[in-house]
Image (tube, rainbow, N blue to C red; front, top):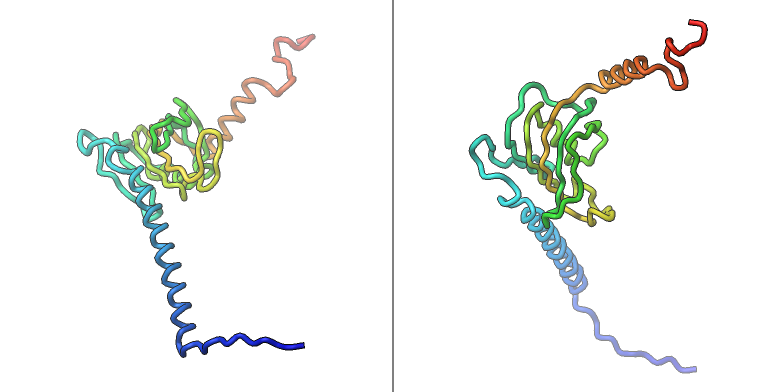
Length: 195
């Protein structure tokens, strides 16, 4: 049995460190390019055309630390909803392409039960106000997709905050309504035999 040896030239001192340094630099550049591309795409969807021109009641577009962009179109009055509240809103949601994916003239939602960007925006609104929102994918549905909203979609909303109440107020209203209608399966007093 013979053993064949292949002559391998010795590695220069420090070459391995340079190789790993180059790999790390390439990873940083690729990560930076991906972040820049994502930020550019989100910023592109949230450009000036997504909002109303400033003036005539419309405020400047604001950007929160989380990345939510919003604009007050018509200021509301009074306090703002909290996470413990239920809101009544009118809204229209579109993708950055302009395609509408959802709308409702009167929808009730718990503030904390929505995508993070929508919940954050609701807590900045006042009763009677009208707002435009631009919600980046990280504050929307992220990588989740459905038949109406593709993965990594920026969501644009027109929202009117009609009213809001605390969860306790809503539950009390529901109980009162149930009492007025009678318990399920219970006959109204005028229909009970012998009365």
